[in-house]
Image (cartoon, rainbow, N blue to C red; front, side):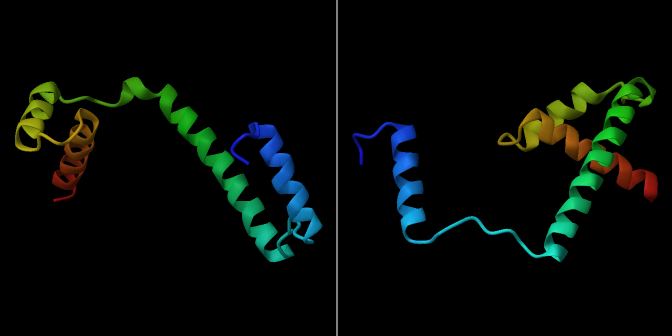
Length: 98
C-alpha cells in the first residue's frame, strides 16, 4: 500500500469498502433540517460580518493601543500580539459594563 499513489490508495479503499457493503449514509429529516438551518444562519452571519467590516472606521481605537499591547506581552511573553489585543478588548468591554 505504501507504493500506491494517493489516487490509487483512495480508489483501493473505496473499492474495499464497497465490497463489504459500506456506503455513505444520509441522516434523517430532522438532522438534515437542523443542518440546513445552521448553514442558512451561517450565511446570514457572514453577511452581517461583511457589513460590519465595511463600517470598520466607525470603531474608535485607543490611542495607547500599541503601548497596552507591549505591556500585555511583557507580562505574558507567550502570548501573540493578537491575543493581547483580544484581551484589551475584553478588558475595555468589562470596564464599560462596570
